Image (cartoon, rainbow, N blue to C red; front, top):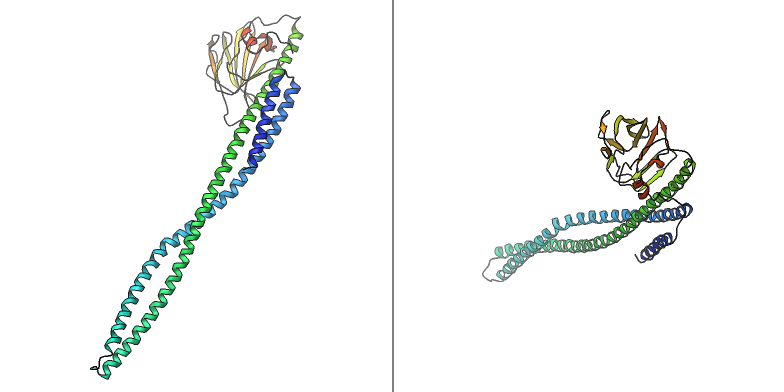
Length: 354
């Protein structure tokens, strides 16, 4: 335990120093990736220690089960036989006392001068029988006393097993607490790693957005609409040359951006479910990914109306994604340049300077 505490302290200091250094300056994608690799190394160390603790716990648990099994066997021996031996010793001692008294009486009466030789012979034979019985009772008493000593040793062994049980429980509790501490740190680092991935993706997306903006700065946009974000709660976005990937963790409604009519509902192999909305003027928006539709084909939908809900796999550590794309004459447009001011402000894209 004494060795583990310094390791925990060093690991905690390392985590804080990474976070402090990260926040101290404006970082590039390269800096973020370097920090990400550092978090991955910490995760690897934490995982190794957790596995080591789990193995140790497994061994101690086997020892604990063996102690409990030994206790169970000893308990059966003690409770089945110890009380019987006490009872039998008491019975033998009482019987021995009675026989001794009877022998003493026979010997005393044999001194009477009025008795005949036949009476004396009978009493002599009776005294011999009683003496043999006393010897036999003594032998039985000795055997019972030896068994009593043996069961006292068993009881002492049982007490030792109870002490072992308490020690093992205490040790297992310490190991569990260490495991919980490492697991909590693992979750914290895993969250930082996830946040770093999102930040890297966001920074790369801003760079891509700037490139896209430069390419079309001299060309008029074909689409005359401005689109809002299809979901409100997301932890990151990826701007491609065509559509936008929204990364999210929670189940939430997917909202229509501009009024139109549902033209298609279905699924695409390896991509997920899809909803298409026709907005007129040969313009359509597409929602693709982990979603469940709540509208029907041919249904008219207004801006802000719920089209469906995102789907989340709580067992997966990966972020869920929703792909949003705008098409004009069935040609994918640079969707990131068609988003409204609210989206640009929320994602710090109004004055992108990277």
